[in-house]
Amino acid sequence: MSGSHDDDAFPEEGLDDTGFDEAPLEEELRQAAAVLDPVPAELRQIALGAYALHDLDADIAELTFDSLVDALPVRGVPDAPRMLTFRAGGVTVDIEVTGEGLIGQVLPPGPARVEVLGGPRAARPVTVDTLGRFTSDTPPTGPFALRLRTDGQVVVTEWLRA
Image (cartoon, rainbow, N blue to C red):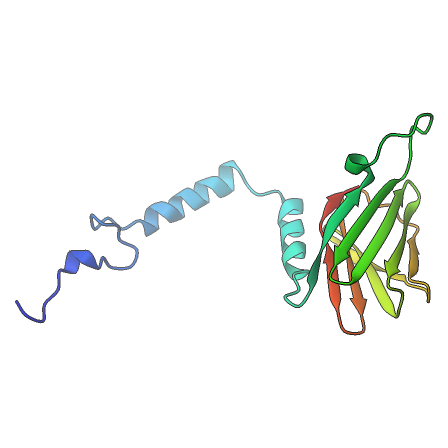
């Protein structure tokens, strides 16, 4: 018996512990799911877009303030703009979301490019001025995030709903 091993301890690929081949059953279940409960094309496109936006070198900016959660409501102001603050390392991004678009500022100010990411749509670049301010005249209509590129850093905010 020396030099031999129990073949049952190492089942062949695709076989379970009892020797049953799971691959055909798995394929049949995939086909049934594709017919009975298909992934909507828009959701598939959003998933592909989110994966394409994945940047291993990017710092994720943490949401540190959201006026919908953290601020006290102001009496007499029914449609106050949403204020958001994101931080990643030494970079802060303040954003005001209105019905007309986005107004924001990157601190510390410096050369930067901001892109508004919005699901399957192409990223919309916006110009950052010398004081770190930027505007976008297109209001986000669904999930959105910002990607900020400075000279040596890429920062991506968390995804939020407008």
